[in-house]
Image 1 (cartoon, helix red, strand yellow):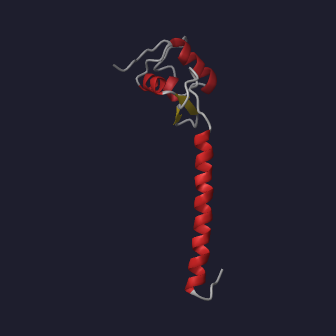
Image 2 (tube, rainbow, N blue to C red):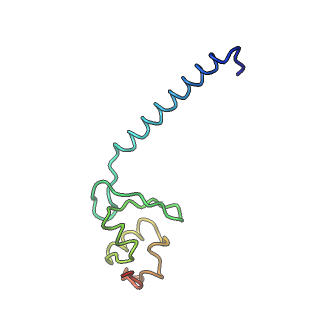
Image 3 (spheres, one colour):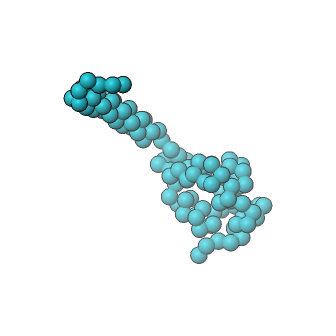
Length: 106
């Protein structure tokens, strides 16, 4: 879009950027308003872990640490497998078929 002078161009782009920033802020507020709960215990304010397989695991701090240290309880591993399949974080090199940790990190 050609402009006849610099002031008009500056005014146009300032308005455009302001509207874009307002939309971005609104979207962020809406995202923050949604409560993310842990997939394992419904604790509010869970962290979203996006895995290499593209899964979005919602885990509270305790379960996120347990996942990273490969020390989840059997029933937790089975629930995550039910939700996400054989994801890297819960696959059979770290946990047995019945959910027992094979290689926990100390």
